[in-house]
Image (tube, rainbow, N blue to C red):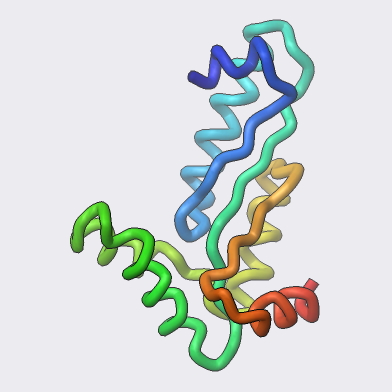
Amino acid sequence: AIRRVARWADGRVGWTTGPDPAEVERSFALARQAWQASGQSRPHLGTGFGYALGPNARQQMDEYIERYIRIFGPAVASAMQHKMIATSREALRSALGTLADLGADECILVPTSSDADPLQRLEDLL
């Protein structure tokens, strides 16, 4: 699929759980290889992940996982609880720095709550 995309698109935006640096590094490497093989210039590389900020961030993340990930089964939901770690300012800052170091051109941050508070906390952080 990545090879086909390289023929038609300027880049690719994916999704990472956690975020998982190894997963992102692999997907970016595949994209770079595909773009090079197709004779295209460097691809635009993006990724995204869910985050929660605030006093009940871990609980908020776990509730998000329960709502959206549990459909894939309890084992997957349980694994996601250990992978989706952007539940503090420090963790979020670290994740964004790591993704930048891996060459991410953009990162789509998905709040795990419909409440506006996490968005305000994100704005303050950035």
